[in-house]
Amino acid sequence: MVALLVSLVFALCLVLQVGATWAVSGYDDIVIAHAALTVWTMCLPNASRRQGAVRRLWILLASDFAAWTFAQVI
Image (cartoon, rainbow, N blue to C red; front, side, top):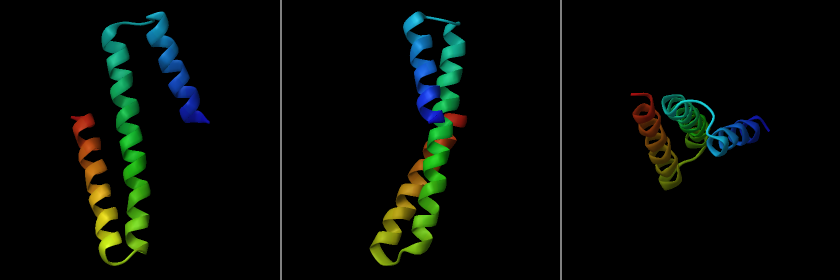
């Protein structure tokens, strides 16, 4: 529910062109980094509960989202 509200506020700011370009870009970076971090933390428990190829898949997905989070933060 919170994610939907945040998305709607962001879309409204884009449509109404509220705020400076740097503010919208900064907000976008923070939201995307938070989304990537959330997905990364959701992949880790799945990797620990699985075995074999499925475990490697979850680890690969988790490392992908960890890299995405890192790229958004820097």
